[in-house]
Image 1 (tube, rainbow, N blue to C red):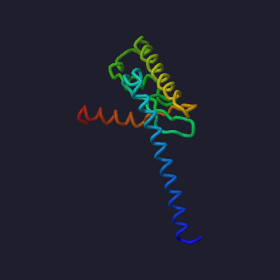
Image 2: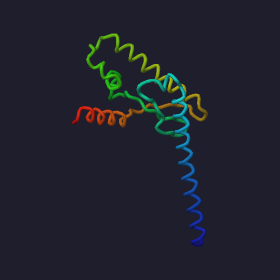
Image 3: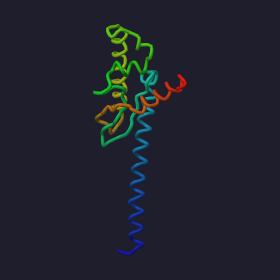
Image 4: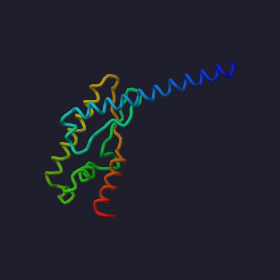
Length: 140
């Protein structure tokens, strides 16, 4: 194969790859727009979002995981709750609301074509940004 033909083949493969990446980015943006257009999801203090697409699975952000409890997540969203007793009814109400919003966010994404599964992933970036904001607000 001549150098010119090899170059054309490489450029064609590269163009297809870049096009595929662009399409995946467009899918994520479109799904996140669906979340922003849902009043319940959009009005919650934490914005659930699609991080990426893997096949027919939407990887979505979450504030809790097996390493981060729901109570830790809620304390990050609502700092005033840190002072409440663990058995305070405010925790149960906030846990139900978070579960409802997260389920709603998942259902919004399920309504999109091509998505048949949602996998939740801890939003470490959000926690990092919150820590930076907290340090900035306290002057550290």
